[in-house]
Length: 188
Image (tube, rainbow, N blue to C red):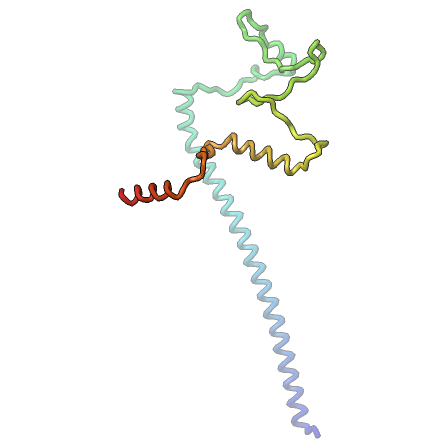
């Protein structure tokens, strides 16, 4: 049984709940508005900081122009280009060139090899350090490519290493020679 007082009380709670939801929505919209205003203000601050930095750089540049003008007048002697120094086309630029003098060095040329001569076969590659012929691994080799590479790389490391392998002494050490060495170490 629902009494009329409880029905009015339920309607009151529903109205209070609806008012709370409406206030919450209004408050969240207000927060979003303030947040977007803050973001716009931050972007404007960043833009103003960049503008201040640019103006400071320009101020420093203009302040140092007097010093640069003094250096230019005393030491460097640079002048701004005049209108008659500019060229209209490539022909005017080419006309400024002078022929090479009798004592001028010869122009740089690219090295080239003609194999049409009597010795038409290419020469074998040799090591610039040892002068020994260099053999290159080929794809049609019967050996495994990994094994060939490993062997060649090992040989390279052995040759390039500043540490040389220790020379082994012939003959196995005997028990007597070990005892003599140990007694010599103990006596010292």
